[in-house]
Image (tube, rainbow, N blue to C red; front, top):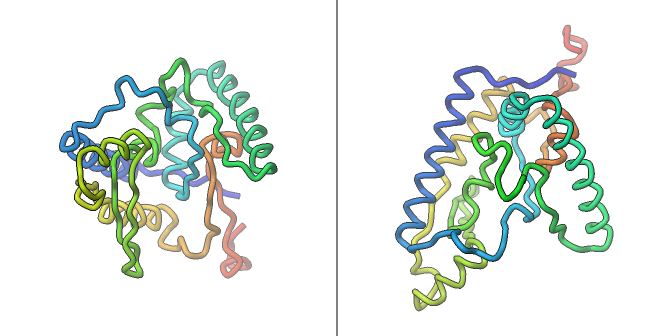
Length: 213
């Protein structure tokens, strides 16, 4: 197994994508006059799963900057998180467990938080490669605001994430040496990404016997 590591250029590209996502979020939030201030809920207990090696690697860049004591504390919370989620799923329930990175309401890896953590809240839309458009209504508080403000939710402004997700997919393929299609898809929570260790890959079956691992 070989660890997947981002180059300095890829780290820079990742930051640029995240910054563009945040600007799009802030623009829609301003149009809706939406804010998380005073919200009784905490989105950090939402059950989010993540799908790219590039974000997994970026998360670990931040995690490795923490001291060993904090790393150990977060890993212990991550193991407890995984157990609680497994129990909820076994009951056919959607898990609602506080993210192991949340400490007193703040993210321990705020600068390295993942895409969903940065964009959840406001309405959004994206077009899949097959042309189908997907719409996301936003968090419950934003949905309530949209219902009060617009006759129909389709009238509300939305953050279009199509281009940024394409950039993310291109960066993911670059990270995997242009061979992303040869590797398995991933579907992991942040806790699983931490407990599993930094992202690593085996040599694809079609390349074994050619000097690969």
